[in-house]
Image (tube, rainbow, N blue to C red; front, side):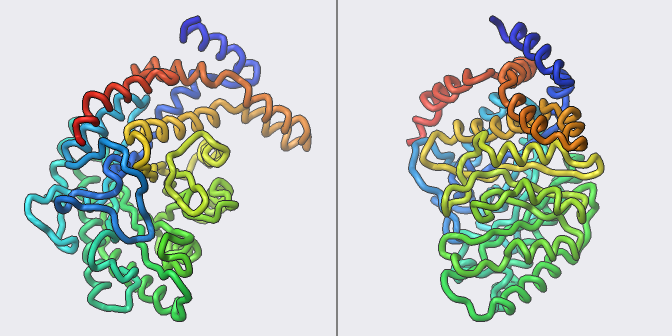
Length: 418
């Protein structure tokens, strides 16, 4: 049976529960996912030859062959990824991924180091988002950047963030699409910290200094990202959830929920509706925590599905931006990319195909047994047939057919990188 025939049968089954599969596919097209650049090269960046991820409580493990060693190779990989994904997406850049023919300190970077990325993205019809890079640098070796007690260190990173906000605004103006600048810092300590208040007070003052200049909100918006702890920062993290929650609400900037940055028993999905009672926008970093590591490849697990349902069920006047944040150097990096993006999209599709009207009627009538039964029944509906039809409409491989394409790319391209 062909994809079209299976889709027609699936549409009939979903229609029995009041679900329009054509409308679900069209809605799914509207979800642009900001795909992170750093899966391609293990978060090394391209500031200097032989650069590698260091510090910051994060690390990439594994040495699978084929890591992007240059910007050209990273772009080549990203282009291949896009050919395997339905829909229109974005690219999320870190400041350490600029083009630096000559060394440029991070407190001196500007839009000129990223003009090539902008031109390349325009050619693909892809919009850019941006992140400051407050790790893998000698001035981050103490474990503190914006929360440092050294005024010179703080000033260096304040200037870096200012420059990054300027770059993000330039992106937004040039591409005619909002560029989100996300700020995450690694600041913290491995063991008992006496003056936590002092570090957080410095962080508050630094953030206010970073954001003193207002840019057009149609071009650039700021987000701040918390973390529970990092490797080497197990005792104290200056940028905790509570700190950034207070900062975002009091300063009118966006909060970023990273799925891997909370305790494993916490539900990020549950936080969404709570936070959006008080704010209009939210940035999500979709990732997968495993024990003490926060950035495994996204899969279609319960946490991803729950989050997707909260995204789809949001109020119409709220805006949720979706980005990815994972890196795995132990498997084929292109395969990791496509697995993660497709899993996120399929979670969104499952939410869009949910019989929400019937479920809500049962819930409001207090018919909780029937609600639970319908939730379970919906899991068995033929979502895969709808997904395959979406892929076919977008001219990308359906189901697992894309795996062979990645294998060919590994043989023809990645294997030659040594």
